[in-house]
Image (cartoon, rainbow, N blue to C red; front, side, top):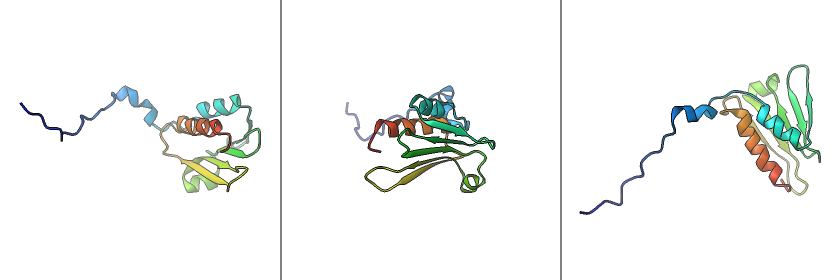
Length: 117
């Protein structure tokens, strides 16, 4: 008997209950807990927006659910980085980012793990 080696692998599909992280919840807890634990300054505004700054002042994170300019661009999170030895750069996360705060928390954790940014 001979077997074909050209068969594609069987697809792996997670069970429905394992996909809860795919739904946008627009929460802030994972990201804010991380930043607070890292000693970042976190300031909230009367409009319910949050502005966070790293201890060295080179990274800004904004949670902007009530910022008209952010909503016009379709974003709720903005990260702005000013590295010491490179050009500044930004990353934005939109209103449709799955479970956005967890995605942002993962991004921020990776950013914080690289001190040279």
